[in-house]
Image (cartoon, rainbow, N blue to C red; front, side, top):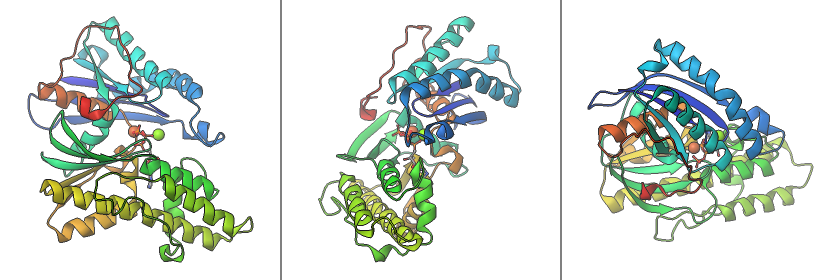
Length: 343
Ligand code: ATP
Ligand code: MG
Ligand code: FE
């Protein structure tokens, strides 16, 4: 089975080809990605209408690229998968419309995929793939969730953020520190030069006894510190504050993940989503889980943020597991808001 996957939920256009047998982990044949970061940077965040228009421009050239790289043709595709939600409505419509138009012209079936299921399953494409069941820490730009995952499509929500997502906390704090968009990677680079103990920042809900998160207060605390430091803040203080911000986010993610593992009794943790690329988070999770005999699995660094490979993979795994059926019905819709546990 050859699956073409299309991702367009936000500011990355991703296309990929995955080959799957009846069983076993699907194999990534090729993937291509265009990030719109440079385009949105001038506005300090994603401009939805610009995002949609750019997806239109990028989709077909990227598709040609993946077919060339894989050495196969459009007619060999068995299923065309696309991100159905959650995400920006206009951006999703471009991917869904493109996928369905292509599929209609070829008479191939289509399958809409939940973006977070893509993130969640992406570690299966790594050199060290996980096995079910596991606890998943989903940390992206729009979501922060702990899930119990018993198999493809068997997702139980254990806890989630009540306000900002972890990636959002990184991005908003980075903005307050005068860093560009998206701020997560930049903040974490600046943090390398700082001492996290210089500033005392809150760890919201750390001792709440639940597996929920809250990051809005952290952003406010960073803002307060930035104001106290004033306009002539030196580079070293910015680095200290970046380090303290990262330490606060990482500590909460670490402690809640350990609590979820304890609560479920599971011995495997899967980390997915853009914040999963954060080095400090990886180091601390590896250390703490190593001591407890818990295996931690991550996506390849290139597949932590949005990409088409995870969408093609999720489609292939859903079809293998009999959780979904691809259909020759091209009357598509998108779901800008969509709970993963409802999939
Ligand atoms: P969602 O998947 O919830 O719809 P999204 O697709 O925008 O949101 P991702 O693409 O998974 O999110 O991840 C992007 C987020 O990851 C951004 O907030 C970005 O700052 C953050 N991020 C990426 N790399 C790092 C890093 N090294 N350290 C911290 N944060 C990072
Ligand atoms: Mg993005
Ligand atoms: Fe994402």
